[in-house]
Image (cartoon, rainbow, N blue to C red):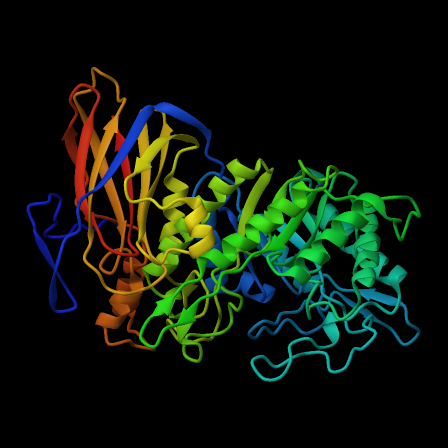
Length: 562
């Protein structure tokens, strides 16, 4: 729904601004230059990947609603990754838990396959035209070498229970994987499943795998062999290990890549294992600073850079596609802000601006390191039966979209051809990588082009979530058609007052049982809103000047058409 404010501040006659009851001076204008006629190659949709622990939320009403919204972001297909697709249980979900009961055994040890819950999950993906990034895991209770206790009770006790252990019998595991893939192929057809991605396990370098590295490599070989026997054209990958800025994680990734390139395969006995893409998990490090959240973006970017360099160091894998299997501001989606105040960034615009900053940094890093990059999985979905805005890492709460989902809507509006753009307030990638965004904000932009349309994304990001005066933006677009007299501007905004259901919920006095009318208001507030537009702007000699203010942690999406 388009909403229009009664008053805006599009020019810089204002010399001061009121923040938190005090008057602050506006900073000097940020000069942004866009060259509409200078292309800089393709703009790949690296953001169309999402994931979550609890697969049974897929077919819940709110889960399906959110998945449908993800498919509406753009024409680009969305990939979804979920844990627990082979975990034993009755399909009842809880935090960091889900199950399908796909495998069990009779009294003689004979396999019994049951795809009922699996079909509910994948039927939802199929109906919404979502492409699964199929994670082969976790270990069924009947196959685990240490099956008891099997189900964990997060947040109490360890989550690494019986599902995390190696199989008693690798041949039985291989048969399970083969039957799983064969069933999906027959149910949805080879034409559809050939575009899916397939991977083995999750974070086998930490507690998610209660075996040795060599046992994981064995599991990988048996799994890949079974996948390819069932679907020869499948694209398979791994290891989905943790952030390789850690020496231990880096060593694991290197050993895995070496195994796939140069070591004996546990199934064939030949040298090497099939690896169609490489995946690892970079995470940031948010912290609580007595009165505000401080993000740790440099921690996440350092892990990405380290992983890129490791992959590039292997001649066999230098050009292999890379997927960031989980790419997030920190490591626990199911840890709420109620008990972890640093996670309060998740409810407001900070999560949105952080996301823009990370994706832009990834694109710069990809260009510098010359790697083959596919995409980054945002490990955020939704949690059923939890309080509104509890501060979980999610895209929506009880069916109400959070500001971060509007950042993805902005990405969906961007064109697929990038054009030259500069900002006088942008930080160097080296500074962000080494220091984070601490001394000053990074006020940055992405500029793209379609036929008779420019789409610009502009954000004002800082690691510290504190109130400061908005930044005046002086945007000049050059290189428009010389005979063009005017253009239609649509200006979308995410900030404290726009595209922000959390702020609207706070204005309502934080209801946990909103009325039907309140819920509708929250739903509307969760959509991407127009700000000071649409309006026609004059263009002179191929040049257009636009001025506006951009608050800290806010994002603007400007679409100019003619």
